[in-house]
Image 1 (cartoon, rainbow, N blue to C red):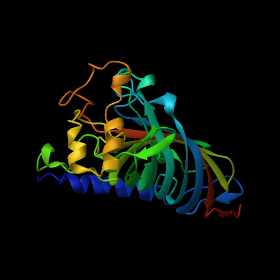
Image 2: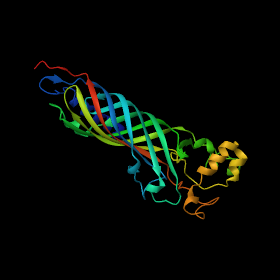
Image 3: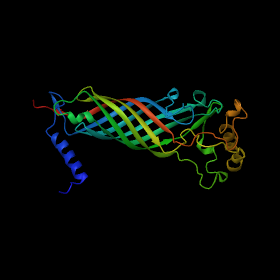
Image 4: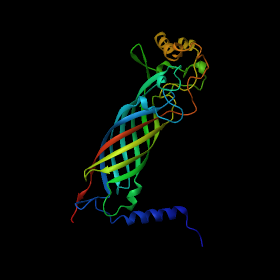
Length: 292
């Protein structure tokens, strides 16, 4: 007897699961859920970075430098089991070596974050829901986003954009033909967990933790080695060169022997990350009055 292909078995299981839910399900004694429920939500929370500046040992966010963040989303849920949403998020991350492991390096930064993402979610407990919706529902999330950033450092009470200064020689001929400035808008991957609490048929409250994996190590403008300050004079305008020489190496305040051309400025083995922890209020559209 030939074995059934695995995809046939999986498709049969999924069909049985969802067809078993087709009779579905009262939200409570007065309202029932349609298969499709729309959600409009807004959140407030905190944003924190996991970068080379201001961080602790290991994969840990820089909680001391957490900044406020917010988001707005529009999404759709299918049978309260799975959903997808479009979400816009804004916030800022920051860091300073005075709060981290490399105090003598003396670097600091901040960067705004603007992000648009498609996020899917799955509520495993809803597989058992047929009669009346539970108020709590934990879930997992994953998605793909596009974000922009712009690292800055403070000098003489002014915030200076760092990417145009090429503080690690990005794009300079002395750095090599494959070197190029990093892009200030890029894609990212999102992973997270959350819990949803049904306040009423119309409103729900969510708490979510979302971590972003980026494909850059330059959220904080630090990734590789110190360069020869003469490179700035050779490749930048006089004004930019003056700023770059002051901002690429700030360790001389503590230890004149700490750094030099070719010495390690930051670790390049892993890319930077950032996360949000937020509280979201959502409006649910699609529940109808029951005939009970």
